[in-house]
Image (tube, rainbow, N blue to C red; front, side, top):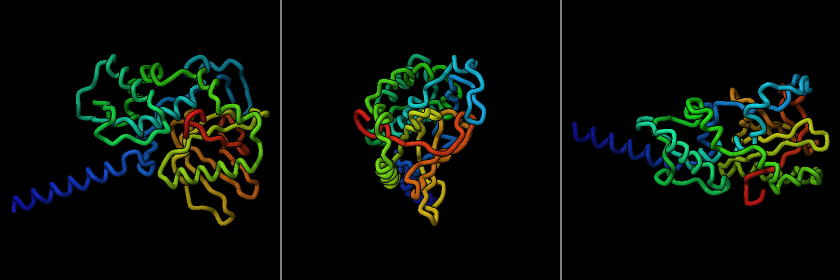
Length: 262
């Protein structure tokens, strides 16, 4: 009986490992409160109801203009890192090296199998790691000003055709159907009420009767809870939820980090 029970345990363990390996990197397993960064990207100015109320936001001088960097980092850790909470923690220099190694991997590449991932010992997940090592993470996941030089940014100046947004919605749907993330650049240029990056990871509910689609996103400005992005087919446009920095409503969406030079 003891041998049979032992054998049963081994089979269950093997199934669990196989299932974990199969789901590794699939956005289906994404947990907002486990797989996102604990700290926020602060805006340069202070806002209320989508309007600037002060050009001297005390937090703007700290960790700001990093929304692209932070959405990219979340995807990179999800695809290329493995956490081992029961292992001894690394010293700061080695942890610095491993964070850099993860965030230098190209985010559009396929997820690594578990055995080839960069190991982060002593922590259970990204949320825990970033809470315990906030400044170390902020120093090593990337610079904010570099994103202004991305070639894909030029699309905000001229791709205002609603047909392009229909195609973007199709790309978003295809990414989720492949169990992948979709990092979105939100812009309403030339109005500039919003100029931001979020990570779309799943639907929030089934498609509505009118054909509108509803998505959950990781917004670096608000790490506490997921935000919401909506596709409105009648208008052929996206709508983003209201918060302090954005009055809510219309935004164009451009995919970023989906391929080279995007």
